[in-house]
Each structure stands twice: as structure tokens, then as C-alpha cells.
Amino acid sequence: MRLLVTGGAGFIGSHFVRRVLSTTSDRVTVLDALTYAGSRENLGPALASDRLTFVEGDILDAALVDELVREHDAVVHLAAESHVDRSLLDGGHFLTVNVMGTQILLDAARRHRTGKFVHVSTDEVYGPLLKGAATEDVPLRPTVPYAASKAASDLVALSAYATHRVPVCVTRSSNNYGPHQHPEKVIPRFVTRLLKGERIGLHGRGEHVRNWVHVEDNAAGIDLVLRHGTPGEVYNLGGGTDLTGRQLAEHVLKACGAGRDRVDYIPDRPSNDLRYAMTWDKAARLGYHPRRAFEEGLAQTVAWYRANPGRWEPASHEAGSPVLHT
View 1 (spheres, helix red, strand yellow):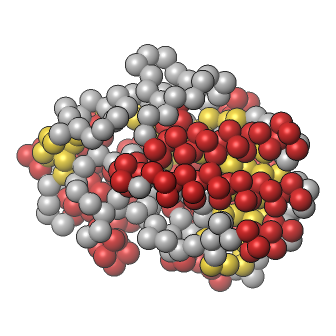
View 2 (tube, rainbow, N blue to C red):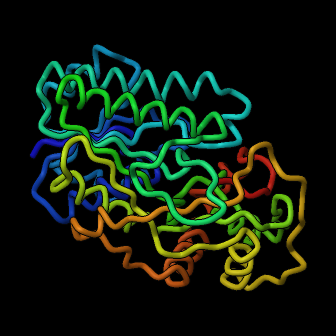
């Protein structure tokens, strides 16, 4: 299969590309704009593969997108603006990239009769759930600009199936973690600050609940949906580990060998949803099962940041305040 992966030099995208190249004979083209969160280095040894082609470019470039989609059998669409705090400051940019970029890709997929189109999304589109867990068919209730832009792009993607039969599947994962994630996100932010001897901060009283999935488990789920998912369907991909912000901080402190006195509690941010939760029974029927235990995955993640300060130290100066990012 000839596979086009947008955002393939980002955190989740690079893990997905590395998985495909190591487990299949597929040929992969990565399309990535190499913004602050993307790097060729994320692809590691995969860059040397003769089955990988790297194209630096923007999903808003309709001519480039059309040319690339025409040459491929399937598209896995991960390119997106993905940071909640940044979306609070510039919601319009998130709408442009996440919604219009998705529409441009779908238009090309329709013209060239793409065999499969996997649109990668987030559990944040479901909004807060004080009890229970979201199935794939519950109404979407996003509360921040980032989540709203992803909910809109999900609906745009699903409408392409309904109206044009573009063979779209949507995946929605919970919070990802793992090696070489940008330090604007909560786990690398906590880890890198602690490794530098600095303090970390929690919004409010640290009671916000998130589900955590190792990025390699998410990549495996996306791959399953690519090969076995039913067009027109949505698949949740969770991790099985629900933690409050306070519990997460305790895990990271322990993994880094730091004490609880390194935590500050700071004012909450706007619309910080108290709890996310979703089921993933549908993906389980395809064979999806999160395999990486949280403590094991966190230890692996901390070890990577310890061993690679040159990869994260420059970015950590631009990642903002030491708060709980999602």
C-alpha cells in the first residue's frame, strides 16, 4: 500500500510512521509543515528507509495536497494544531488548520477515489462527563476552541462519507504520552522541569481527570482502523489508566525521584473540563487493546528525556508556564 501520512513528523504521527515501516511492507509519504511541534528527528532511523518519502509542506496547500493524494492508496490524517492553551489565544488559526486543512484533504480524496481515509481526533470533542463514559455515538460537546475545531473536522470528515462515500474512519484517542513529545504537553512539561530542578504546577486543586494511553498503543489502534475499520465509523482509542492531575503529578515525581514539595497549585484555566471518559469496545472488536502499563510507559518516557536533553531543552524555554496542559 502507498500511504500518505499528514503530520508524520509530529509526536503521534512519527510513532505511527515508525510502526508502519517496521511491521509492514507499505511505502509511506510524510507530509509535514515542520512547525514548532514537528521534527524530522522524531522519525529516527525511519528517515533512512527507502520506503519513506518526506515532503515538507502544508495541508492548506491545495495543489500540493492534490498531487500527493493522487499518488497514494490511503491517507492517515494527523496534521493539526493540538494545544488547548494556544487555542485560547488564537482560535481562528486552529479552525483554519484543523477544519479547512481537513476539507482540502477530503476534496482530494474524493477526486482521486482514495481507498481509505483515517481522520485522527481526540476524546476532548465529547466534552466533560461527570459520570459514565462516552460511546462513539454520543453528542459532541466541546468547550474550548481546540476541541471545537476537532469536533468540526470530525463532522466534516464523516459528512464526506455520507455525501460522497469517501471511505472515512475517525479515531478519537485519550491523552497520549511517550518519548519525544513536545514539552508544552503535561507529562513532558512536568518531567523536563523536574529534571532541570524546577517546580511544576497544577491547575485548581489538581482534580481534573484524564485517561492516558501510550502513544505506541494509539499508533497500533490507528493502524488497526486503517486496515480493518468500517468506513463511516468512529473508533475510540483509550488507555485504561484514569488519573487526576494530582495523581499524575505523584507518578511523575516518583519516576523523577522528586518530592511533593516541588508542586505548586495555581489558578485554573478557562473551561478546564473536570473529567473525560470514553469506552473503546468497538475498537476492541477489531483487536485493539492498550498493552503498555502506565508506570512502565512513564519510566520509559522519563528515561528518554534524561538521555536526550538536546532534543527538548530548546523547546522547553518556549513551552509556557509549568501548568497542566492537555
